[in-house]
Image 1 (tube, chains in turn brown, purple):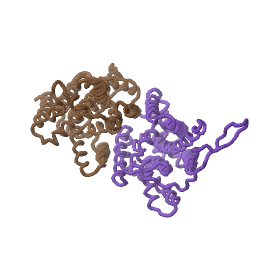
Image 2 (cartoon, helix red, strand yellow; image 1 turned 90 degrees about the horizontal axis):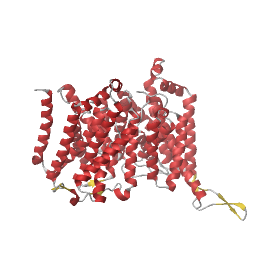
Image 3 (tube, helix red, strand yellow; image 1 turned 180 degrees about the vertical axis):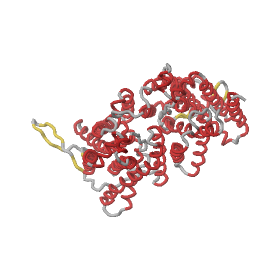
Image 4 (cartoon, helix red, strand yellow; image 1 turned 90 degrees about the vertical axis):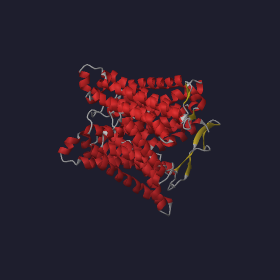
Amino acid sequence: MSDLRKTLGLHVGLLLVLLALNWLLPAYHHGNLARIMVLASYAIGYNVLFGYTGLLSLGHAMFFAAGMYGMGLTVRHLGWSPAPAVLAGVGAGLVLSLVVGFLALRTTGVAFMIVTLMFAQAVFLTVLYFGEYTRGDEGFVIQQVDRILLGIDLTDPNNRYLAALLVFAICLLATFWLVRHRFGKTIIAIRENEDRTRMLGYDVFRHKLGAVVISGSISALAGATYGLLFGYAGATFASVQYSIFPLLWVLLGGAGTILGPFVGTLFMFYLIDLSSEITTAYMLIAGVTLVLLTLFAPQGLMGEVRARLFRWLP
Amino acid sequence: MDFGPYLILASLEGAVAASVLALTAVGLSLVFGVMRVVNVAHGEFFMLGAVLAWFVASSIGGHPALGFVAALLVAPVLVGGLAAAVDMTVLKRVAYDPERTIVATIGILYIIQQVTLMTYGPDARPVTPPFNTRLAIPWFEFADGRVQMYWPWGLSTTSYKLFVIAAAAIMLLAVWLMMTRSKIGLVMRATQLDSEMAQAFGIPVERVYAMVFGIGCGLAALGAVLIVPIQQAHYLMGTDPLLLSFIVVIIGGLGSLPGTVIAALLIGMSDGIISVFYTPTLAKILSTLLVAFVLVFRPQGLFGTRERE
């Protein structure tokens, strides 16, 4: 069997298993998995930039929040229906990532990390500053009547799960397609050796900017979906913590692998879920995991699997 | 109150904030200057200093000054020791790679913060200042064709606040003397200039790194001990000092101690003054954006003279 068929089989297989789980899982885990799939879409967006382009951003929460508020505010204040509202969210993420990318990509390495962190902090504070519209930390609920998309009530757990799966599948297959084609191969080349890629005649800046915009837009889509499916938008989602989470998920699952973001999100979600029954200091788990990963497994779970078992894993 | 006295009051508050910020930021700048790594957990070492100060001060009975002096001596040393241990167990193992160090210190940030939450709890707790006399400040006005001195209501400071400013100034002077006049400072500067060459000349670079990391975090803890009688100890108090120190260190030029101190005075004073008159959120938005733009448009001058790729 060729590598392409194996990998296609693996990814489509995963999506089919997730579809089947819709009717098999008990209610609690059913709800969790819907959440995990949306958050994994966010991690997929992050992975495009971190895993494939090799740019470490510490400010992706601003794109997630742009999607969430782009959707939430248009629904709340302009009375838009969900479909255009989600598009508005993705559009907000696209524009923001274009501007931030254009500025931040003038820097490299540590400076890039700090610039993205600072822009994200500015966005977070802006959300608080316009508390009149965003209701700041408290956030606002998106009413059930506003969450009916094309006659489908997204508050129903079944519909919600399938919508989350649809968004996840789109993101997964889109990145799968991306890294097999010209643009994806070029950004991987930039990750491996930026100078050599430039010398071969590629416009490195434009490819990086493209990667930031794709990454930001996917993150915004995840943010808009999260707000719509779970009916809430709040400033927490713009805070530093939500910039660290995708980094953690992708590092744990394996940067630069297609399945890594999902595996990392799944593991981390349940790790935190289990530990929060014991203690309120659940972020301790996140901290310990981050340190252990940097020390012992910088490749992450899927990275180790690829290195030891299946060389063909994308 | 008139505008004049109000401004004096705001500047005094700003000066207290600026002196603590200068100590914290010099710690961060020292670590970046010598080791070329960014310590994201710096704010948590600050917080740890404040929390340890509370533990020490509350476990020692008697006069409040006794507990405070004990805290002033014990907390920075403990924090510095812990930081040196973190350096040897974690940072050394990632070979001080700039990006991996940032990820690792983010992890350390959460570990320190959450362990504090589990042990110390979510409450904010005060430390009693050793002395706290209220000092009224006079103001002048023209009346009946001559200058008159009077004491406007509300225009006052405390002896403790003046002590904070003086103590921070003395410590900064001590750091400067250590860096420029002592053997240890010479070794540190040699390591900063060229760590491989320093190693070749027999300088134990790894031990220097551990010491610098310890001193840097200890300075943050010292700043926290000084501020904790004014501002209570809380497990989330590390975020603001971290962001402000970042801002100061970037504006002042990374690794340059005089630049850091000047920037800390500038930012601390203006932050204090601005937040008396305007909403602090808008001031913070503008200052974070300022840092981002400085990094984008003038990275070479602000990240020191040499870029390590």
